[in-house]
Structures are given as structure tokens and as C-alpha cells.
Length: 105
Length: 105
Image (cartoon, rainbow over all chains, first blue to last red; front, side, top):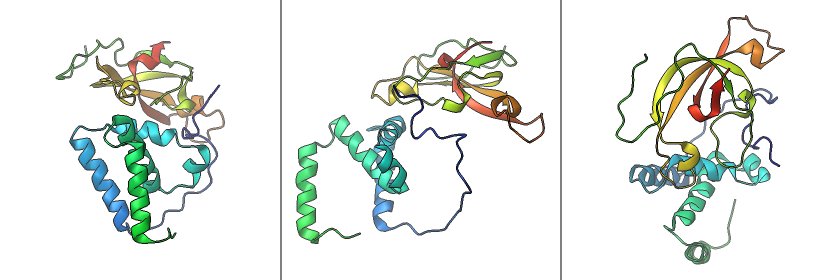
């Protein structure tokens, strides 16, 4: 049984919030643009995106950055919608990896 | 009677009016849920009807979410929600909750 969703943390002890400024790298801007376009074009809903963020494994939910959560969720949503397939995605990832060389942080 | 909201989709009739005491259902099903865990089981008062909206629990599963469900802003006393709350007794927390999560208190 799941009582409380891991993401549903309202009211739990959390410590102090430390706001920091940061610039958005290009890939984050692209993720944002894709989400806006797919939503305004009626291809996906914000509710599906939320569901897929909430279903990230607990460890991933805790350590992924904001836009890393978005891209994971967006990808899952596009697969569920049949807009891309898992195989297509895997092949594209191989192609990009070859083009770019080893993955860096 | 409170104002009705024009929608271009079918919507359920509102069951509650401003001032009604309501209890949030204390259940924890799977799926995408917009009712925060911490407020389930608590009693509040209808502050306003916000309109009727497609059910996000259904939208998240790629279904229409129709008929739309009335959404209320519900007012809870902070001291009742958090027994160790240190602020004034007049402090409230307001949460927007869909009709199917509410019952008459």
C-alpha cells in the first residue's frame, strides 16, 4: 500500500529554503519550449506531466534538477502518447552519443 | 445561489454552497491526485466555487476528464490542521479541492 505519495510532502519537516539565482542553460530553455508547444498544441496535458514526475523513483525525484524532472516526464509522456517510440528514442540517443563523444557531466 | 460559470463542456452541478462545512475524504488511491495528503480527513468551510474543470485525475491518464467537476476553495483553521500551530487562532489555510473529494460535515 502506498499511503502518501513521495512527492506529496506538504507539512513534512523540511528545513530552511535557500533561494539562489541561476542562469538557464540552452537545453533547459529547449525543454521548456517543447513543453509549451506540446501543451498549447493539445498533444499533452500538464496533468500527464505531473503524473509522470510523481512516478519517478524516489531517489530520482530527490536528486534530479527541476528541468531534469521535466525532460524525464516529457519523454515518458511522449512515449505513452505514441508520439515517439522507445526504440526510436534509444536509437537517437545512440546516434547523439556517437556524434558528441563520451557523455560528460 | 452562487454565480454559475459558463463552460463549453458538460459539467456536474455544484453540491455545496458558500459557508457549508465539508470534510475532505481520507483515502489514498493510486494515480495523480490534487488533494494534498495533509488535508485529508480535515473539516473546512466552502469559501467560494471556483468554476468547473475537467477532472485532473482522468486527464493525467489521457482521458477527457468530463463531465467537468466543480472546484471549491475550502478554508481550514490552521490550528485545527496543525495541532502545534503557534500563530493566531484566526489564521487559515485555503486549498482548492474538487467536489468528489468533499462530503458534508
